[in-house]
Image 1: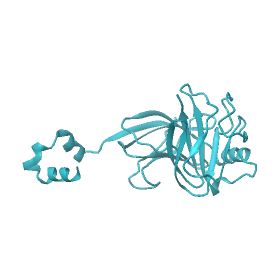
Image 2: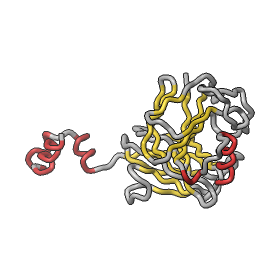
Image 3: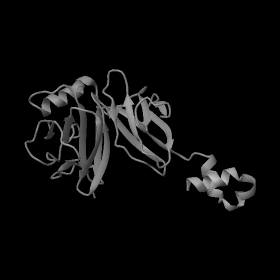
Image 4: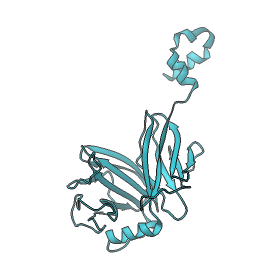
Length: 232
């Protein structure tokens, strides 16, 4: 395909009729999709002035689109169609939050990124692990499992492509349930912590599976990557 497109362009005046309109358009124009949503704090109040970066390979790359959420916490940014990316939300006083890595061929709306403060995050960690590992020293992965109505689904095991340093399935109060599957539901709306929390001592890419669903996460030191699995 690369050779064919190269010939199409080099022989523009002579071979152009052999190229389809779609091929010519794709060569000259970059296709993008729009992702939009809202940044919130843990009280479900809109969090303005959070920086949202669409990350293709690594944070801070000049090719990454970056926007700031407005006074209502709303954000919208354009990303390359069918190109792998994840979103990273940052704001002073809050822990940086990453979404799952994915690629999209269509626009997506209604994305919610909940941003905890550093104190709130460490409180969750302290409840989940009796030995109280420190937020800044590890790369954190949080997982929730819900049904199509958004209700928590219990009895689900989280399978990781790499062994974590430690992990816990949490009760409604955020403490270790002592089980090997999601538990606690139905929990109050202000459940303390996710259904599952784990951490690694190094950053990297992790594949996560729950039932027949799978996602990929880029985990970063001192940051949270939070995933939600919607199960049928």
